[in-house]
Image (cartoon, rainbow over all chains, first blue to last red; front, side):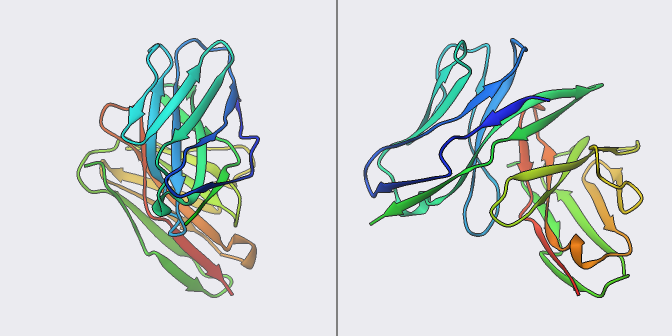
Length: 117
Length: 115
């Protein structure tokens, strides 16, 4: 099984500032997908952004972008112009092959982001 | 698009009874669905992978006779917690493999409390 490590249990950021959440993973595969999900207090898991490993270009979704360093197996999430609604638990996830035509997600332990007004 | 619903959102039951949780993909067909369990302030733990028309694949340590999964159609998977006990109290989340197959979309979760 692959492992996903989020080394920051908690982070805080001032509203309108920028914050970066870290994620590293372990894999021997060359082609895979990586994801960031957020889980606000409602506990609904929401897809933030995804990255395909064979793509060199870093994924971007509005204020959210990633820094994907394939050789270093690093996949950090940058949130620009932070908003109060960004406060949530953020999970990094790696999609791994699980047999047949199936894939499953392996999640990190999460980073709790607080946004201060 | 890619909306997943779960029902019920909250359930309280007595010890020894069985509880069924439904997971539906509302605007797409999902050949594969997943069931997770999440304890407070912890990450998601995959319980099983559910493929339409075939038996579910359970993760190591998950009792398949206790957590019955049925994926009878392309839009519905059910998780039945049989003979529930207080230690089964948890937050259960389902997800579905979305169009294109790369991304999982999650339901809003079900809080189960066993008294």
